[in-house]
Length: 135
Image: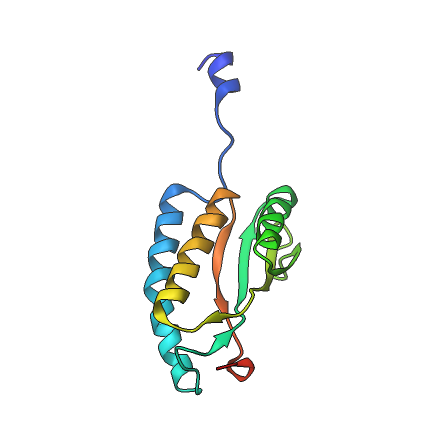
């Protein structure tokens, strides 16, 4: 390999195309199952809940870039070190309220996966507290 080919190589991504595809498929598949579980706690399709989200990446710059994009969505967002791996950065926070129907939650999960990918961050999932429900 010559010197110019070495210089023109793109830096290795934290989130590969293959891994993104796996995560996206899994998150969109799991969202309706999670919503179904919320039904057992009295959450209806009309209920409005905030969702807690989690992303991981390997750089503070990438974490801050994603944080800015999420803040533009009106979300509460924090960044910090991962508790389990100090080389990893965690981006977490809460969304604005959204309806708890399959379409809304699956669409949101898909968007979060894509937004994470755009900022080289892995969308690790979401959770919520059913007691915050507002019909």
